[in-house]
Image (tube, rainbow over all chains, first blue to last red; front, side, top):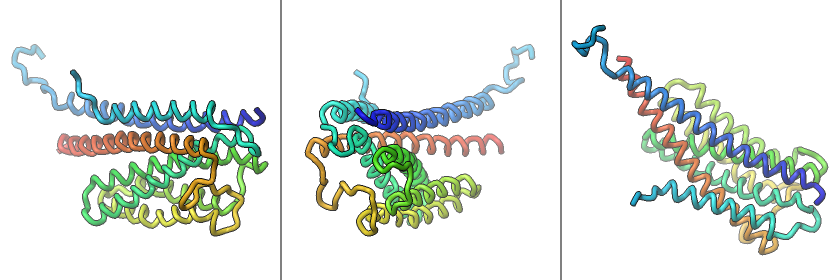
Length: 55
Length: 225
């Protein structure tokens, strides 16, 4: 069981690296969805479109 | 009944392959006599290196397609492949270094195989930096395609380096066979399949995001006009 620490470190590095990359992809996806939401809000009904609106 | 999406199916296969590979490596494969338990890093290190090469080869192919057809889709595929290949090569360098410490008594040595792999890492890191530094989309795609094609020259050099030059790096995968015990070979093939399936999933995710980003950019431009 000598050097088991090196083996554990090797496996941990690989799983952490892969998870970090997946996390990066998820954060890119979140950013894009936020941009899409802003775009959809901008394309929504403008002030004055609805005559019943007291504003 | 809901339809099973291919990506969902591939993800399940990939998770199952990883679980099986880890079980097989830790509980079935015997401990190597000379190197001891640390040799088991090899079952991750070698499949990641080969899968990385496959992704650099894909980037090379997609870049040729881009230069031939000038279709933005191929540029996105090439960039995504480089990103995944670079991720795997980074992990290969780190796991190799962790293995080398107890076996070679050093974290790093300028051996031909290690040096060629480090150069490969630098080439594809430069590719990603180049993508960030050119604003013009067309020019960026052409520059990057040329770089991915030229950079691929280093992949066969990495593969052959331990055979051509005097190297202390072990040569396990020979041109026609694998020079290891059958159970070790099975473990290697299991992890190979697991990493290839994971790579395919990551490629699908990365390209989908880039395509979505492209559509969003054109929508934003339309909104700005």
